[in-house]
Length: 462
Image (cartoon, rainbow, N blue to C red; front, side, top):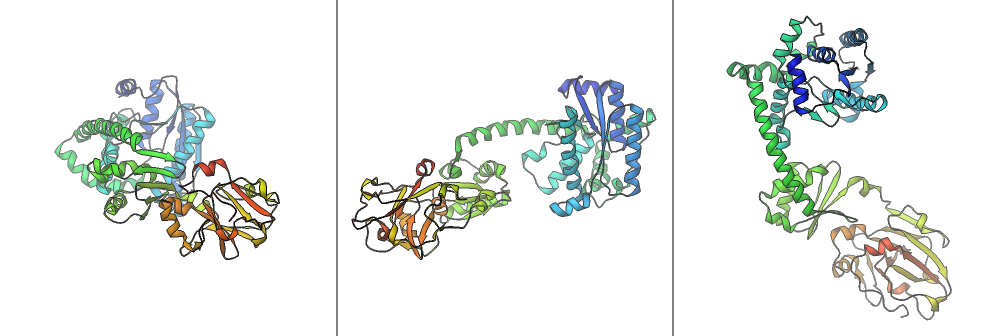
């Protein structure tokens, strides 16, 4: 067993002999066997034990047992109690997922603070078989079929060369002591039910089933590597990161079959599930404007692009900002567009024709002014025109995308729109030969760079 253990570590380059390894030890036979193998191999290691408080006195007994083991082995011992049920309730996740999240976050702390290179868990080939079938039952893509990886970031699995049966034979042969977890025999957990009912029958058919499945999983990993390399190339060509959001051109989807699989791979990093992706693809046969959500992002189906934005950014913007004084520096406001404002009586010296700057007749303004997002039914009289125009029609004329519309802010005075920010002022508030004082608000260069097409404002004086 020790020879096979050392050979496996060397053959896949799992870690260097000089590395310090933190062993995750529950007290069960698998983790105790791992400790003994590390001791006999002469590797540098410490022991970490998580007490999840789920089995009362049994959990405390496991803790005392592992603490004593570390003391007898003369290695560092780390232990932490977790309120697992409370954490699961707060995060709205299962007890098993809560325990996993808690202990791995804690392991990261130990690695950082104590100079360990990796955390070693005692997963073996039978665990891999169980995980494979769990993913298969729940539904999975190709990434869910690669099994438990021997090395994943800072997590290593040095027992992935052997089976539960062989570990038990080894433990009995050298008379190891360990703790039995009675919950491992409960069929209320899917993993246990698979192990006790399904895999037992498969082992009857082929006693080397775990090894054969491991060979298949290796082939799947190779296929996954080829697949991922292809998707990475597609992603580099098609996904654009812009100030507007993450853009994926809709035209390309007709060039790749199957559409939903390709799009799923591109959207997977943003949390979109496969059923949602299928709905997105179906939306291509309808009008633009549909919105889809993942837990972390929103996808807007525009005319030419899928526009993906983090939900945190969408909810962070204020809905209404009021400006009470002329002296207020708008650059200090919590506003997504950087603005600056000032009053002037030097009318003749004002520059001409900038849509990114609003030159407004001071005496016509009623304070407080308000900055808000546009709303359905909004209208104004665009500079140079005499009649009313709905903002929705103005957006169409300016070829605004749906994302452009969402990001558009307006400046109001009373009930009147005086400026579609960065685009066009209202003709009623323009500077005329009768103007004596002007209120000037300018967008910064970064805002002007992102402007939608504008016809400009070539005449400030009516």
